Amino acid sequence: MSENENTQQNTQVQDKPVYNPPEAASKKFVWKNGKKSINYTACAEALPVYDYDSHKLIGHQFMLSYVADNPSNKEDRPVTFLWNGGPGGSSAMVNIGGLGPHRVPTVGTEHLTPTAKFEDNPYTLLQESDLIFLDAFGTGYSHVDPAFDKKKVWGVDGDGASMASGIAAWLEEHDRWHSPLYLYGESYGTMRNAVVYRILGERGIGVTGVVEQSSILDYAPTLSGNDAYYMGMLPLYATAAQHFKKVGKGFTVKQWWDKAFDFVYDTYAPALIKGDSLSEDKVDAVAKQMSELIGLDKDFIKQCGLRIELDTFRLNILADEGKTCGRYDMRFTTYKYKPVQDDNEFFAGEDPSMDAINSPYQGAYLELLQEIGFKGDSNYDGLNITVNEDWDWTHQAPGTMGSPQTPDVAFDISTALRRNPKSRILFFGGYYDAATPFWNVKHDMDKLWLPKELKERIEYHVHENGHMAYAATEALEKMAPELHDFYEKRHED
Image (cartoon, rainbow, N blue to C red; front, top):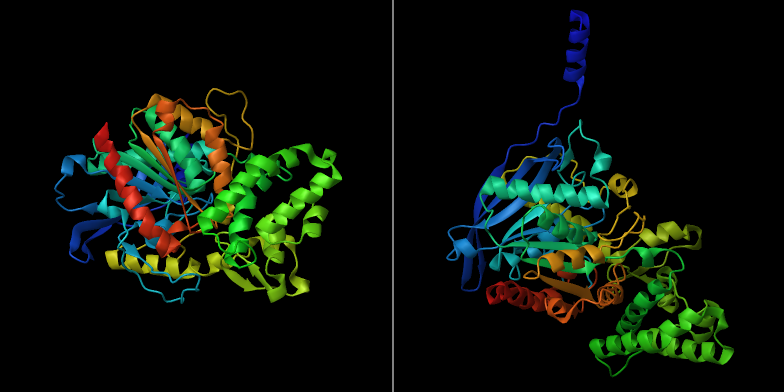
């Protein structure tokens, strides 16, 4: 190489943009709840994370950890890695919303004020485990290195592999290789959990437990016209209609939910399978039962072929009041837009249950980071739409052929559990979560035909909450003791 060529190459390397991560920051806190207290250190840092196969730098991943100071059970103190979903979502919401030691309190279905403040969280998971909240690459303050192809991490498999590498980076940095390890994911984060759960085992890193909150494992029901979609939605329509006092008088929420579940299994599923070969009398009978369960007019249900889209329900259940209901939490309502604003894509993205908490949560979270002393930039990507739109959905489930673009990671969960039969899984669902219907995830797990010994390692809990379970105080009150029991079960093995 000539001197001129060498100089030119060096100039190109120097001109290449370089990301300089902010310095790590930490602060000591004391969490208090009545007579209980925990001394802990909060640490905000952007750790370098390397690709497992090529050993190339993926980028710097932002992690906010809460580690108890001098716990009595130091050798047995778990570490839990937590994240939200999207894909493209940071971990801020699951942190400041209800799992971290600080929480922005909520009041039913009221919208929070934009300047809502955080306070000590009486339901924090810190009582059971040290907590590490990871922002996926391209979200929050996590940056992909300019020399690394972001498409390699913006996808089902690449994301799972990079998050597993991020976990290893934190364990190495903080000398916690022998701590019981748990994963906690929400929404798409539950799909990520399934892949990371399997990948960690393949890399020799054992997982003690996995918490799946507001789960989606199989994306096939999201495809237009898939009958499993309508089956999963119907119990949610029923509980929402009951909440709005359209149906279900005299029943508890659970009773009405169970009634809808039974209807799906015994009547609705066979009717959908038959399609238009169903007799006219049977269509009428099924539509009548649906009307009594979900509060929509029988003839309207018949016109829809017994198949009610979510947005159709949201637009019609409160039409007489000039209101629409939410998706993430169907109990939330807002005023209907004018007809000129009836674009379907626009309405699908409008959600009063997200509007109620989004900006207050992020503002409080950034205030917390400032208190810790972390100096990030002004653009914190709570939800990076570019990541979401560029996501590679192809995924080859273990033991199957091909890589469909509608991933099903229930096979990853069952594979990981078979390989690690001492691990446990907990599923949380919500009676009002229309983003990730609980019926579908229960159906996905039932289809695995796991042996009795492995099914006993899995538990399911459903509460009166929407997608962001932590936004419902009454749900957190029930989840906290259930999480305590789940973590304590590690001592039974």
